[in-house]
Amino acid sequence: MCFLLSVSAKYEAARNEDGKLSNVKVSGPLSLGLHKKGSTYDILNTDDCKLVHKDMTDILTCVREFFREKGASYYRKLQHTGYLRHLMLRRGVTSGEILVHLVTTTQEEYDLEPLKDQLLALPLEGRIVGIMHILNDSLSDVVQSDETRILYGQDYFYETLLGLKFRISTFSFFQPNSLAAEVLYNIVRDYIQNTSGMEVFDLYSGTGTIAQLLAPVAKEVIGVEIVEDAVAAARENAKLNGLDNCNSLPVMS
Image (cartoon, rainbow, N blue to C red; front, side, top):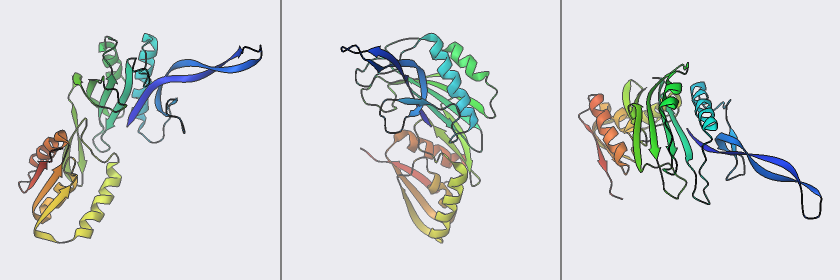
């Protein structure tokens, strides 16, 4: 889940040129959450979001309050100024392992060690295995890395799906709901039925989830993927699961 940093909208009474009172929009406190419906810029705090595990909202609150106290600026998309951009969280449903990614520009600098300590002290149900600081000075409003600094742990986590173990990195695609994915992939296997003696191609294969689920019942499975990190993760996952008939190939963009 990727959350955005901004300031909340606040309105104050002010007199216009005719001396009449009207509401004027001014900046409120720092917000961390999701876009307000119908708005490109307004961000709503999501302290009680029902779409994600409570661990994520606890982490979100911790990060927001830390930077509120510091008075850190948020990135203004039109002016291309400011520091805070995104908070990206990934949590394994079956493993409970969590990756925390703070995405900022290089326009300001803060000591993030206290934030790291606060995050690791949170009483979470799962476990934080990695905290990353991603530097992103691109003009586009996407999460990308000009440089990634590991503040704690590692830049990957593990998740189990239908008896197979998968290593998932920061930018590699993996179904966010593993329990629903198991139902989906069982339907895929039933639909394909007998693939013994056949070569199977998995296009847009990501970390190789479907490819590896089919490998035990196929002669060979080849995954095709454009994201290099995902290709590397897919190959690592095939080794992790002891699958020597499953390979992942990169596609040149």
